Image (tube, rainbow over the protein chains, first blue to last red):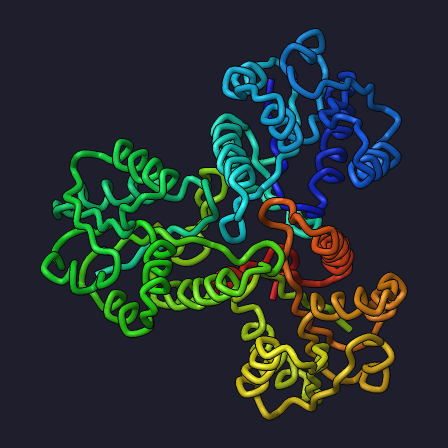
Amino acid sequence: MSIICFLGGARSGKSALAETRALAEAERSKKPLIYLATAVVDDDAEMLARIERHKTARSPQFQTIEEPLYLAQAIKPHENAVILLDSVGIWLGNMMMGELDWRDELEALLAIRATLILVSDDVSGGIIPDNALARRFRDEMGLINQQIAATANEVIYVTAGIATHIKGKP
Amino acid sequence: MSIICFLGGARSGKSALAETRALAEAERSKKPLIYLATAVVDDDAEMLARIERHKTARSPQFQTIEEPLYLAQAIKPHENAVILLDSVGIWLGNMMMGELDWRDELEALLAIRATLILVSDDVSGGIIPDNALARRFRDEMGLINQQIAATANEVIYVTAGIATHIKGKP
Amino acid sequence: MSIICFLGGARSGKSALAETRALAEAERSKKPLIYLATAVVDDDAEMLARIERHKTARSPQFQTIEEPLYLAQAIKPHENAVILLDSVGIWLGNMMMGELDWRDELEALLAIRATLILVSDDVSGGIIPDNALARRFRDEMGLINQQIAATANEVIYVTAGIATHIKGKP
């Protein structure tokens, strides 16, 4: 069991690097590949376009599981797989919209005995947002990223498509 | 005399790492520990909660000095101490609200003959803020961070609770 | 021919470091120095002040070429020079305002046989902007930075005036 986290800002290229890593891990370990999709398909055209773009870009080797909220439960039957979760930020947004607490769920996720490859969003930059919900999102995302990074075997920061290990080694 | 700067975004875990370092420096050098609090306690509930949370988390070994503006003057009598200043961003906010110029004050602070551990805010990310005051804050914070980093013995960038030295060595 | 990209947030000190590097490259190679200015001088007082500040700070050794849109064409006659382009973000803003597609133009730029020193803006941080145009800018800037970084010989991330190579070596 190992946790590998790709962290980066918007359009940093973190999804593509995480997918490449997931394919390499599955190849090396001969394990099945699962893509855990967190995005809820709704009426937002931008979001739909983004999901579609990611889906088209993704290798057909992935079996997709869709679960916006209860991630640990969804992947529990697949502990022998390499699981790519994209992204932790979208999941947090879903939890906040449902007014659900993420603490227990995150703990259960990080205890999963699979090769877990997480894509997470660094939203710590920039000035304090005007909007209270955005401030809360930024705070909670930061706490989640700290907890993931403390547990992960590797943390890779992605900037302009370039990966820099800030914890562990490939 | 040495200056150690922990730089990071919101909820990056920089305060906790800076405190751990301050405790280690005081332990090593047998010097007293001072916490220089810059936040002005006002009616803002979010800010009060944040101050309270930081205060509760902080080790009781610190003697707290509260000074929102004239930092060098406040710590001048404690040049034989290890001083933790959290945060430079809050201090800049205070200076801007008071329409005070930070240049001389920053120079005096960086000339202090103490072990100075600074927590500062990286607000350089994201798109240009709509708000003129936020743009000014972002500009001035960037200039201050450049000046601190040029003088500091160590600059540590903090992401998701993980410290990366970008200048000097521990 | 080589491409060196200085990437960083607002007021990170990236322009100054890029200029120093451009001067060093020209000195080493005995090539002429060209500054490719992308900013359109309009009525925005903040922008004017910024341009003026950069211009005053810049070494007189640079010959300045002003071109807000068609960069490759503008520098084509100077392929034997060291060219400093500051910044890619301003150019993208100009292209978006003119409703022009940047893809072909970027490709032509990256194919130039000169020593090209690019200053680009990391706007990937922070929470999702409210504004649709800002979101689009952030997305396209991210794609451009990925494309530049994939092609560049060196990518240098700048934080508080401190340069960290994330690709290649000086």
